[in-house]
Image (cartoon, rainbow, N blue to C red):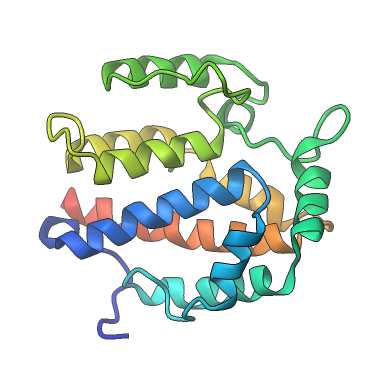
Length: 210
């Protein structure tokens, strides 16, 4: 590691650091949306063990994530994902913010999120089954707010507002549920890295507000 930081310094972040943040949000969105395919697993078989973002807090969780994805197969990952998040009735673990914030699906947190998305000029893809409060969706929004080229909305202040309202409020509760489930193996590592990344982002926004 060239730097030993426990939080990102957003105010002086260069383009490479911001791109790394966006890519991590995109990766996590992909892993929470569904099981990895062979192409993604192949990337992790040759992935470097140094985390793609500066921050000592990410090193151990990144190593765990790389190891977990190297140890699984497409079929094993699909079986685990279905067991945890799909199911024939009520899933073992819900991936939706409303459930973790209000205890039920499609509740007030989803309505609030939809209002904030509309203010950003975003709406739900009608071809997607998941509602907007799916963890993958909110991570994709964060990726867009970081990497998008519309500076009127894709800026640090909008990142801060969205993160505070729609990521920080419940992402770690989801990670708790996943890491506490006996069937979680690959996704225990996904949750561990997600938790560490969200904590680093939280600290970065905390520093920004000082």
